[in-house]
Image (cartoon, rainbow, N blue to C red; front, side):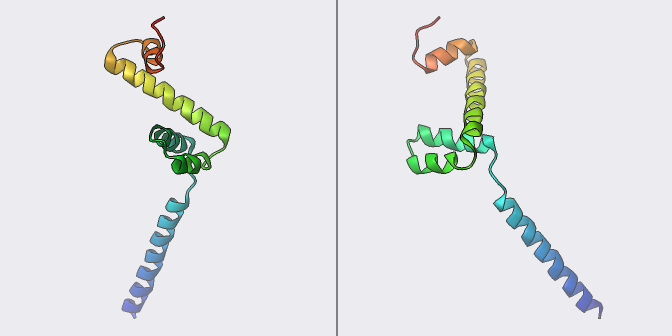
Amino acid sequence: MWERVRGIGSRVAGSLRAGERTRREERPHNIFEAAAAYVSACAEDDQDRIDEAAGWVSPEALSFGVNELACRAVVALARERHESPGTVARALLGLPAA
């Protein structure tokens, strides 16, 4: 009898774990995932991936995420180069030094 109870318990636990995996896979993308996918697709000129990432969140949320990514990238490069963020941003855009 205990074998039967254990068998039922293990099947229930297995189905719960499977349901957990399915919910994780179906969770919506957040704005930072969308921004990272969008910017990397733009850098690689991959229109299909650009369109896919742009559909994950609203245009406003994507714009915020791309802006946040740009700020973090400029700050990281500035630290790496030991330059100001303004200098790095202007250099990335090909603008003359201010």
